[in-house]
Length: 279
Ligand code: NAP
Image 1 (cartoon, rainbow, N blue to C red):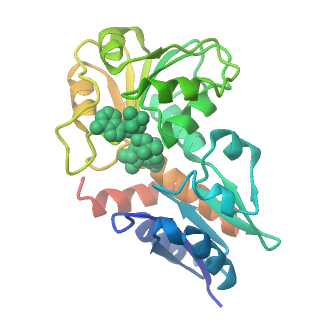
Image 2: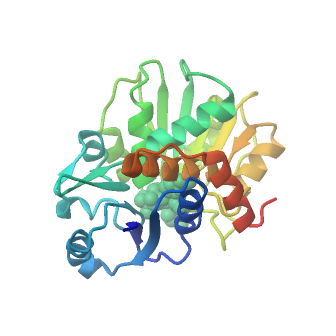
């Protein structure tokens, strides 16, 4: 019998995970089907119980359930617990166990696109302090030579994020306005807010006018392929990256965890590009 995997969220109609997951199963002859489940917040607990009852072996979690799902899981990996967010769940010995791959997937994508093995002695700005920022901050905070500043509209949320601590050198919490003024101090800027996402494609949380020479700017948004912030960064001479590779890597990591099979995330990226007509 085919295995069933899925993704829960609200809204979920926009999710591209069913497309790339089902294509990957077909290409790799994995006998499984992936479905997007729209869940109302009030039904989250019963949805999770229901998935266990019908034999779902694993599922992804997206907005707005990454934190809310935690109380309804049987176990949470310590890293995900620290990040206070789960985005992949696996059934292990009858228990739903939650993990978080956001930060790892982003970092792997960053290193690949920067064509480097490691980031060290860099000054990094994270724009945003939501779930994705939390995971990225936690992943980066393991590097002891990094300065990692956080800029967010709601500064108190960035202060909360800073309290996660880490092994890195230092973090300063700043406003979006300060980030704009200090932008030429950073080697890497990562944009993690939802500002600039389709259909609000002309918006940007900060205006890029004056970057450090050789700066790398990453925006985890993937629709549009080039956000307003990335457009401004490119025009200011930066190397840039969107969120597509991060998304493909997360899906590939989930498949590997659920089925033990490594799949080609480059092919997933190609499908994503085609689906979004980015080519
Ligand atoms: P989240 O937890 O809801 O966080 C949203 C962030 O956006 C917060 O920092 C929030 O600031 C900020 N924000 C929202 N509206 C704003 C506005 N009008 N002005 C200024 N800041 C605003 O969401 P998330 O899960 O971190 O996801 C954020 C984005 O990342 C989404 O677009 C999501 O699609 C994308 N994402 C991509 C991937 C990938 O694989 N490429 C993975 C995860 C997420 P406040 O704290 O002030 O509200």
